Amino acid sequence: MKKNTCFLFFLFILVSQVSAQSFHLIIVSDTKDKTIGESCKTNTKRIMKEFYEVACLLEIPLIAYLLEEENATTTKIKETLKTIKTSPNDICIFYYSGHGVSDTASQYPKILLKGQTLPLSFIHSELKQKTNRLTISMADCCNALGTSSAVTTFKSEDSLLKSIYFDNKLANDKEKKENYKKLFLQTKGNIVMSGSIKGQSSYMQDKYGGFFTDSFISSFYYLARSTKKNQINWQNLLLMTREMTYRNSRAAERTQIAQFLIHLN
Image: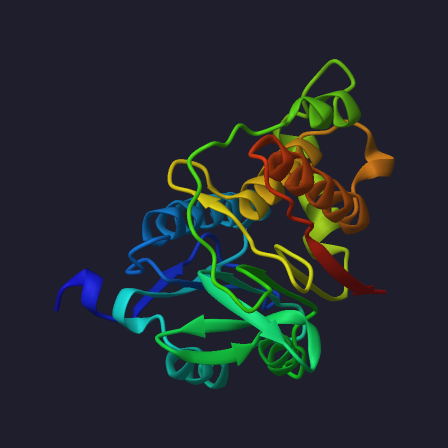
């Protein structure tokens, strides 16, 4: 069976631990779409790489469910949500890259795959009902009546990130691990986020991926490597993600404002 035509399930056992703890990562990516397929592929690779590094450094198993190409459907998403079994200490992250439309019942978008829609709010609600300690749902897609199209002008505006997070030096691996612990192991609750507010499009570019995804990864990269301990929290990370999404969209002569809702103990 070919890799590109099957439902891919990766299980990376990084270390055996006495306490049951896993990192569940669900990635849904519309890589077959004619307009944004290449951008979705870029998003998928970057998100997988970033969270794989987190799991490696924290020495916990990463269980990744990848739905792309023919398997990027609302039916497969629902099946995956039913399949996942979690424990009280687990981390569960859902990430979507593709088309989306606005949801009359929520400020967050509906995923749009092969003519079928599924609200991000529904996915987030389903994941919250499980026994996860930390649940995060994120979607890089439009939140309007129309669908997004790739744009070709894009330059990441990350100089602001460097000036805020760095104190003339990078965190070493030990310090970076402690930063990851604060974000993933010492936090309980849930977060939902999307690349654009209601009524807006979300933009993508083949090389860098979505403006929102690039901004999240850049903000995460700098925050995780910061030596300023008082800044290591999800609020700062997502505020910076929103700022960078806006800056990147304005640099491309678009306007895109990311949104998020945090419920953490």
